[in-house]
Image (cartoon, rainbow, N blue to C red; front, side, top):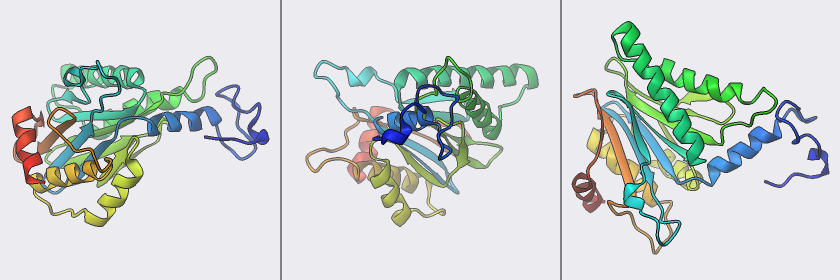
Length: 241
C-alpha cells in the first residue's frame, strides 16, 4: 500500500488518526490479510462450508502437516488469512471462550457471541499505544441452534454476517465468482462444490487443487457438527469438479 507525503507521521502510532480519518496501522494490517492464503466460507440453507488453500511456499515445506481449518467447538470451525501467528493466538482464545461457556452454562456457545468476543479483542488492539493490530482476518462458521451462521472478522475489529465470503490473496476473484454462482437453496454437497470451484478460480492456469493443497470443513443441519474432511473425502469431491 503506497501512501503520499500526507501520510507521513500519521502511521507512527496506532492511536493517531490521519486528517482523512484513517488509522494507517490498521490499513497496513488489512494489507497483511491480502497476502495470506485464500480461504472461502459459504452458507446455504443446508449448512456451512469453509475451504482453504495451502501453498508450498518453500521447497522443503511439509504442507501436509499445516492446518488451515480449525475446530473451535463441536458445532463451529474457523479459518484465517494473514499472519499465521496472529491467527493461532486468536483461535486459541476462541477455543478458551467456547470451553468456558460450556463449563459455566452447560451449553454450546452461540456463534454470534463467539465472533463478537474475538472481534472485541481485535478492536482493543487498535486503540492502545505500545501494541499493534492483529494482521489477520477470520472466517467463523457453524450451526447455531439449527441455524447456519457465517461471519468474517476484520483486523479493525469489525465483524459481519455473510452468505459467502472470501479472504486472502484470491479474495477478489473468488468474490466475483461467488456473486455470480451463489444460491441460498443449495444442498450441502453443492455448497462444498461451489466452495471448491471458487477456490479453483483463484489459481493460475497451470495449477490445480489436490487433497494435499486444500482443506475443507463443513457443518450440515442434519448433524449440527463441524467436520473436517479426510483426504479420501476431498479426493471424491475434487473428482466431481
